[in-house]
Image 1: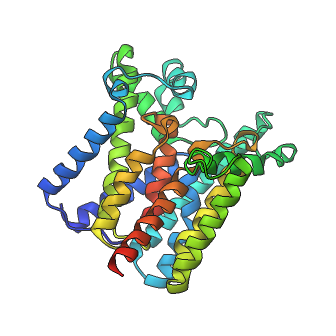
Image 2: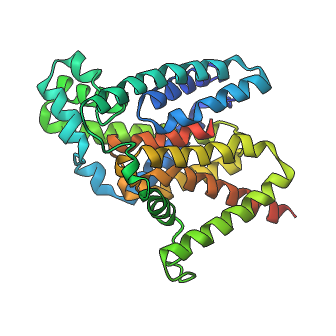
Image 3: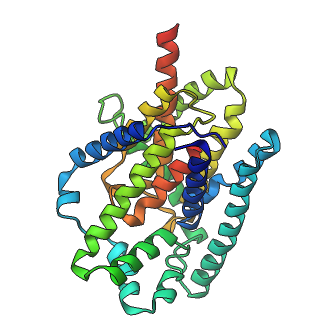
Length: 150
Length: 179
């Protein structure tokens, strides 16, 4: 698997740029986070109602979703519940940034040069529809995009 | 960061992707193809992670079916697939918004013409793109829409496809510029 050697300062510049773009698209999501659909109805509810191990390894909606269950577990076990939306939103931000970095730093079959990958990385942030924006339940589509470009 | 630590992060990312929903899992078989062609052991590791994740998701799906819920993979909903395909693909390639087409069905025809032209152009020079890019995306779209609730899909399903098409456009612009 090919990966680029990358200096820390370049990594910081790339991350800052991506974080700024994500913030500019809708600052309110990061300033006043929300809990979105099944994020609260299923994952946080289960984390609150069940034993940690049971909630962490539960199957919902016909598939297993480790990321959602794990973040709900962290939100409930390690933070006051009023901060649950911050935990879910900022962990989604982490995945979006990781996907951006993965695409920019991994030479793929489709994108060979850094220049091409950088443009596609920026597109990732600009073209993401509101539905998949900073919610744990739709991070599976960001992860799938990252897996496709590996 | 050196190549090795990045590769480890890479593997952790893919393991999490495979264990979080079905979409990423559909790209796992193509890592086996890459292993057979390039003999890079990390691709084999990724494929094995995908296989383990597949069985976990299979257990989840059996559990779901046994609960009596029949909203997924129910043949009564099969007619929704075409509509969901239109819905998914016209969100980010909205030709009506650009005032090129007049309705969503013309939108999808224009989208398919656009994609076919782009694909033919690239496949002429790099046939391997069929295995690594086109086939995985077609498989991804068909399977995810078929497995979605009532086969209705949604705009979120088109995200990897949108980014892949955008990548092709970037390559096309670069080629045009260099020529």
